[in-house]
Image (cartoon, rainbow, N blue to C red; front, side):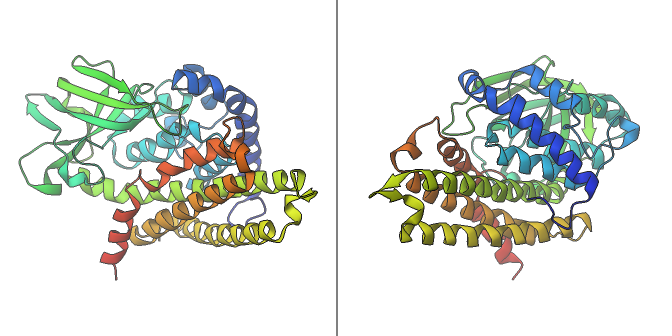
Length: 379
């Protein structure tokens, strides 16, 4: 993964910092994270101390002012370490922080961005609702203006960082306009009266990261907590969802690369019929096919990263990267589990956790069927 032309020497130095952090401070704790269903609070503080939170936050708000490639490196190293349970870090960095940087008022930026860089404030994105899924136009949560306040009512589900979040960026309907026209984004502090955390959901994978339900019962926040302009929430989400989908594709390829590496190591050591599995033609051909798929994914993702930093990545291309790379990722994981045999179904092996963690990649960020629809509309 190193030596790629899109990354500078400074990027690669940062990669080493991220790699050491995940290997020493996340991987050894994954079992306890999974038992508790979330990372400990000091994880966020330690990530902030190592410069792994808000890498794109401008210097005037306490951040390093880096480009998106620093976020991509964090995602890659997270996946490479087999620590996808810490994907809440990517939600914070790749989803919540960019909304604040691009659309928040000066007041909101000054209040929250420095805390998001240090880990004092963890962010979540309140988009998905029980009846809406990937259809953001179907949002039912409402925010009604009452003097100098918004009064918010509704419910969200499948929200990453739900139990860890200090602030939630809530998609709510602020007027009666149908579909996308009535949607706005509002910052809600988790300490507000009327806000409550529902169940922390038990998942098939990503067990060490918290995903949960959120309830808003006449939650009052200042009118100044509106992010950007009223009624522009859907447009903002469409703009930023390309970034989220690129991040998912980045993690997909890096995770597949890691899985292939673990599997090659395993089949060179494991024997069947008196010789290493690696010497069997079927094994070698399977690995060759996986290597080809991963290489194609790597070329696609690196091209998208180049387009992104040049501000030329469009919604359709991001959608293609998301659905192709995540489909490829799970295909690789499934084949690698098969090559591990019975051990591939044992949780102590990294491939097993990776297989379980990877399945949701085809669902969140917009289900892959929705991605194909977006691509089809561009034809």
